[in-house]
Length: 357
Image 1 (cartoon, rainbow, N blue to C red):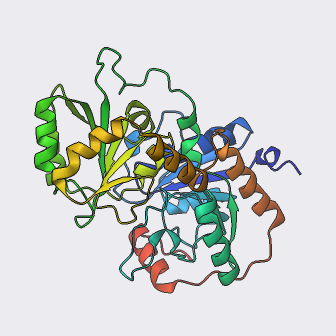
Image 2 (tube, helix red, strand yellow; image 1 turned 90 degrees about the vertical axis):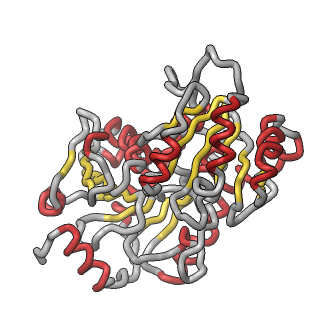
Image 3 (tube, rainbow, N blue to C red; image 1 turned 90 degrees about the horizontal axis):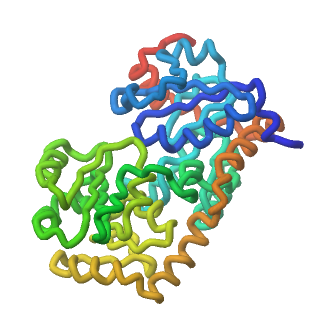
């Protein structure tokens, strides 16, 4: 059966709680609309800005309106969705597995919260584990599809605002996660400040949206002709514009490395041969200079890593996610009931002020 053709006349909900989720789901939205499906968005909480919605995008403003609309499928880049939302629930992830550990010491990427019917995995290095978890739990299935947000990454972007053809310097992109224990931002300020004054490289900076505001303000104050601080809901143009990335343990480094570009990391939680990881700030400049040379041995390790992380460079991951989701809807496989999650769903009802049963 042509599961892409089955998109026509079906309803798809984009359930998001962070600004970066717009860019994750828009390639998927494009495929749905091209095939006659209907898309609506729901923005949960106050950390997602409705101003980022496009004029031709439709938003449901209450849980009541979501339930009345009765979506066939919901796509979620976050970790949870209430069980009282109708339809199948599909996890598409908000990043790659960067090795971050939760409070219990487990990799958070593989934390099964009992919310989803389908996990659309990104590549072999996570698909195997999710398949094992699927068999162990029995209430969800997995399908390796690639990640929709990367579809535009593998085609040249016209009029990229972060590329300056008149500036011949190499471009360094600095990104950081928000966790104080993991973030490079509080630890490398003096080094980055010096780079902004020296002007050896053209520097772009972008932080996780949950970065503490005082750190954001501190780095914004460094802006000059050498350093630009960027706040955006779409990081793909930034990734395309840079030659090398400096990062910590943020999963954005994995999106960058898929372009086959070097990454320097500071105290990465899961360092590997595909990264230039340092733990001594005094060695930072040397590491960045080395990365800009794109040494052959490093580039070979990067290629091997990418084949396991996300082997798809055809820009068709959104189509694979949509086909897998439609197949789930139409075949309706016999799965075990999901956990009831009474406490979590009570908290969600309270947060969303929804008490209908």
